[in-house]
Length: 393
Image 1 (cartoon, rainbow, N blue to C red):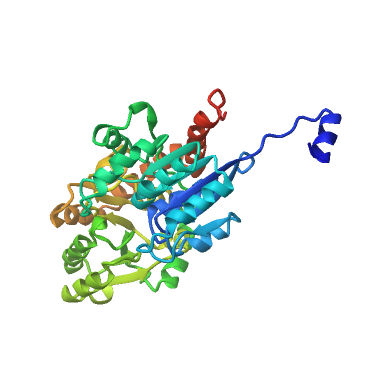
Image 2: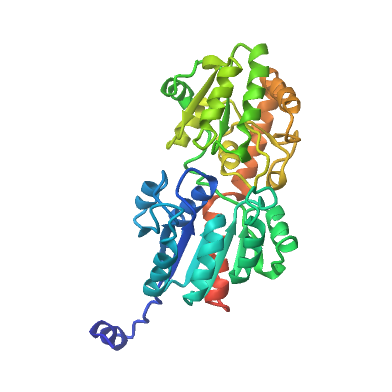
């Protein structure tokens, strides 16, 4: 017994329980929605009850500095994803830091970190499924590996009900050990800012009178930005004041730039790359066009809703749980450009319709998609296993 403990006991002051240690493990800290979720879980977490740390399987990435600014310990487990230093380094962390919870995000972390954590005696292993993409993943081993390593999961968190259904029906997880927790965003940071429109247009060198359509996300197969550019080509021919911007980075960058040049889009399509200050960009935008092949519940959708930007999106899984066609968004079948083009024409020529959709979407996101609500829901799952008879209020 320490001297401090003796003083506390002599004074009759109840000793505060120690904080639970939570380690988030993610494939990388490059651009992506899972990285935003991770940042929000830590930023809005209950720091009186939990001590948070984060580890990336390799490298640093654009979110490294953002997480470091939160004042938490950060770990890069390997300098390259093909060098498996992450296995011994993660094991060493688990054995020396004695985490109560290891919470994994994305496929490699799910497949590798959960078994390592289990072997090192970590009590609670949480698997966060951000998308039910295993059936479309070109890596043949993705689905069987995820299914096999689910046996090391104490609990699975799914970002949409469709993702939870996939985990239960396709991967065999018991329903009692899978919970839907919708993504949430910082509603103080993301909100309508109409008075900042001119400033945002000037900052990103967009014409003041243009109708600006944005595609936002990683430049990858999943997001199908090739379709986005084909839609842009069709609209630009008809509407001289329509401009398109692509926001993000990824392996398809060079191919998309070549496609834009081939289509003769010129300066009517802008590649903005990674934008760190997204709240400052949203006032410059008139529409979010999401052409994804598959999704869970994209953070970009929530941000657009919170900022009052109308949405045209693929009619997919998790988005159907928050977006309703002709009510708070335009939802169209994924794949062919014609349905997107038709809805975008309407948005360009029917401003009252766009306003109605944006107002309805803003109300929807404010009613239940805050980062605080997401963090509390996740922490209740932690405590279900850490304190079986306890719960957060």
